[in-house]
Amino acid sequence: PQKQTPAISLIFTGALAEKEISSTNHLSTMAPSKKNKKNVESMNSRLKLVMKSGKAILGYKSGLKGLRTGKSKMVLIASNCPPLRKSEVEYLAMLAKVQVHHYSGDNTDLGTACGKMFNCSVVTIIDGGDSDILVKQD
Image (cartoon, rainbow, N blue to C red; front, side, top):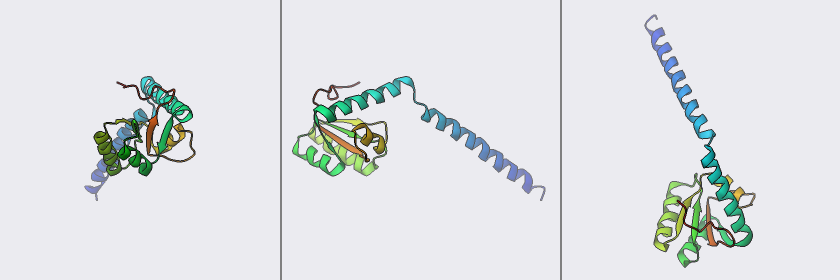
C-alpha cells in the first residue's frame, strides 16, 4: 500500500500540471491580440458591406456551383469547416483561380458576420459591390 500512494500522487500532480498548462494555453487563445481582433473586425465590416451592396452565395453546395460555373471571385471558409469539405472547396477554388480566405471565426461567427441568423461554413463572393474585400490582402 505504501508503494501505491506515491504513484497515485505522481499521477495526480501530473494531471494537475497538465491541466494548468492546458488552461494557460486556452487563455492565450481566448484573448486575441489587438491586431488580430482588428483584422477580424475589418473582415466583418467588409463582409457586411458585400452583403449590402454586392452579391454573395451562402452555403457549401451553392458555393461549389458558383466555383464550377466561374462566377465567384472569392471564397471564405470558416475555421471549423470539416477538413474534407475544406480541401474540396480549396481545390475547386485553385482550378477556378479564385482567392480563398480562411475566416478566423467558426461557422456561427461567419453566418452572423453575413447578417444571417444561421450557421454558414462557406461564403462565396460573386460581386464585391462597394467593399474592398476583393483587393489582395497580405
